[in-house]
Image (cartoon, rainbow, N blue to C red):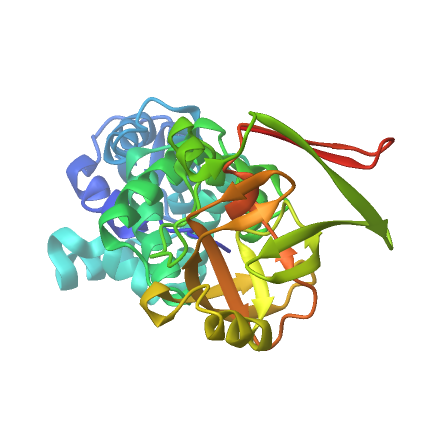
Length: 347
């Protein structure tokens, strides 16, 4: 389970001791108290629950805290004998309850279940839960993400992500959606928080007005003929003297070509090692991960437009040359007219 992280020890710390008292001489209603098995009152239930809820920082007034603390009280009532209670008090003093929990694995599991029952409806009901989940998320990303993380942005990203989950009252069963790129939760976090902050070699971004400076053409709009092959859209692309039919892939970040074509282009001085940006990992549509060398290239021609400052990935594993968002995002609008078989580009 992702990020299930509340510390019972912090919440239970000294609660019972702070509420413990010597039994009064007059009779008291048994149900109003947390008792030993023999009926010795240890703590008033209402006061215990109130103090317990205060320990749940940032969630003391929530229904979730009431449910958890009521569950605590139920688990503790009639759990210990008089002898166990006094021996624990003598052995551990103020920490007698923690002492008992460590000895009683069944009690520990029952107390954890108090949390899990609430987590099934809402994991992020308190500030402590949010903070702990944030730290757990950071550590998880550091271990699982292959690319280098931008440490400066990681804290901001995780803070954004857990606050969205708090806002959505995400239950435990939905936590697996964090790793599912097809889920609403994954994509909302990616959209609102900017995606996992890896140090990207590619400089491709979403469209912005400044990108128009990279596009040259006689007019602000052009139509380019396309063909459909096996339900895939292809278009003619020219770089220098090299003219090929490329696969138009709006799901690809950059342009991808084979290392053999890259070698030929470098021999023609279309780009060089001076344009090398580094190595990047790409996840292809079939789920395969591809490691590519990244270059910056200019003078990519489609139709009547020539586009500069394009990110180009190179790998020996590339078969179909891909025309991705590094090119398409240079335009304020691009449209495919299936009926007329045209790609319409607007600067």
